[in-house]
Image (cartoon, rainbow, N blue to C red; front, side):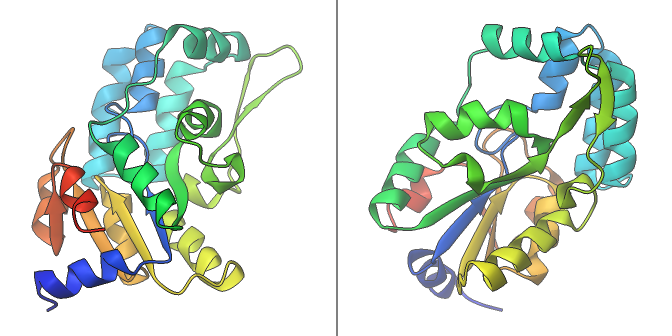
Length: 223
């Protein structure tokens, strides 16, 4: 097992850092906030928690939650217009510091591209660096499902994205940071997984992370 100094060395020398978004880059779970906006909060939050704890497959949880919310295109636009971005404390400084050190940054999320794009823009991260689920709508604007071909629509999806980044982008050393079970899965492919509990502590992730933080400033000081 690597000691903390070895983990810090991997972090410092990484070519790229991939972040989960919900409850990591931002303080909340986007799908829960969307459910609240659409008046379906109570039905959805328990499913989110079960998915994050690993009690059901991510795809099952995603499909069930979306079938409850059924967000239309107008609701998505209204949600974005009325819902300010709540960045996690220290994330802006961390991202800026990584960018200053010429590290590539990617968002890999089980959330929705349309909700994550404004977050990426606020942190000067290119939209093409987002790997997330995509909602589908009928021409009337009504909800038509989600793109099941996105790798992030199922368990193991983040692993697939990171494999793609390593192969296609020729990134040798990748660090992933996240709070949930689908983030923990990346341990098998990344050079370092850092568990994050600054917004919510998920015990399974905390117990299985070689490096677990609750404050992004801990990472800034090492760079």
